[in-house]
Image (cartoon, rainbow, N blue to C red; front, side):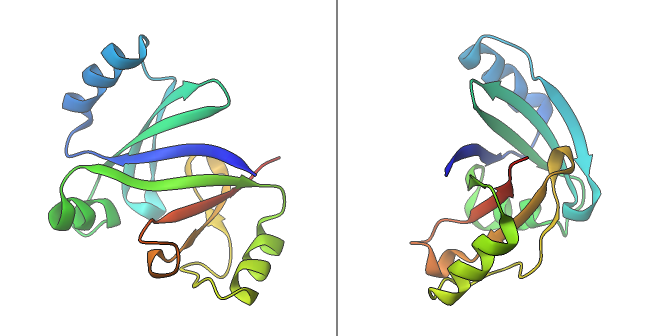
Length: 131
C-alpha cells in the first residue's frame, strides 16, 4: 500500500493553482471534471504521488458541503491498493465503516471507494485500485 494522492478542497482553482505552482515549481499536469462527484480536479504530480485540488461544480457537491462546514483544506487521503473489492471486504470485515461498498469511477477513470471518517480517526480515506 502507498499514498496515491492527497485531495485538497479549494473554493477556487483560479486562486489556488498559482499558489501550488509556486510551491511545487510547475503547472498542473492535468485537469478534469468528475461529474459523479460534481468536482473539478486539478492534478499536480509529485514523483509517485500527487496533489489534487478539488473545486465544487455545484452547491450540493461533497466539496461544496465540506468547504461550507470546515473551510478550505485537506479533504482526503488516498491509498493505492492492488485489489479494491478485496480491500473493501477485508476492511469491512475488520470493522471499518464503508461509504462505498462497490467501487465507483473517480478522476483519471480510476476505480475508487471511500471509507467513513468515523472509523478512520476522523480522516476521509479514499482507496484507489492500481493497475
